[in-house]
Image (cartoon, rainbow, N blue to C red; front, side, top):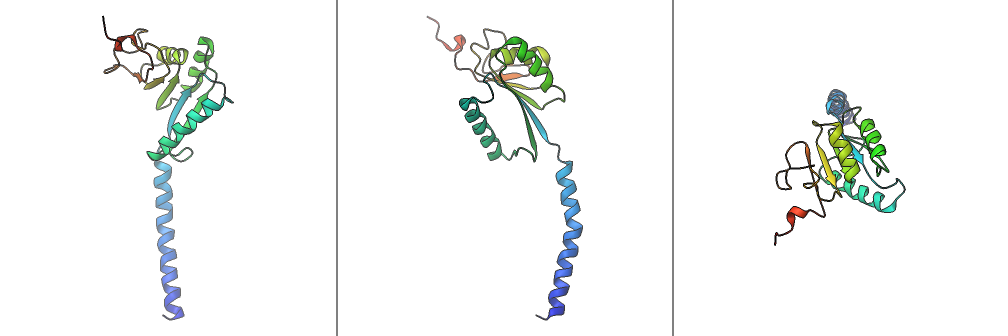
Length: 158
């Protein structure tokens, strides 16, 4: 292949890239970054909390969600008191997240009181049915769903 031929191929490749590159960049920029608000009971430096959230982010990445690319996660730590949970929830709701992850009863209660439209997923809530957060675990209804490790409605009646 002659030098002129290689130069022409290179210029063609470069010219094609110059056309495609802005289109690809524009497509990436137009994809809206999704936002998750996380209310967590533990303090920020807690090793168990860090481990749980690392696993959470890892599973999100397996599903194609990349922090800083198409996902933003906003954390509010130490929401174990009702007052702190209310303040943290208000902070997370401005701007509106796509979903809230509420860890613990105080976090869930604050999120439930603050919004009826943003989906809320809870963890570590005892008796969510008995506390009135969801209608039942199979069909929670409303904007709240989640995982419970203790629920009286699951126990067999004697």
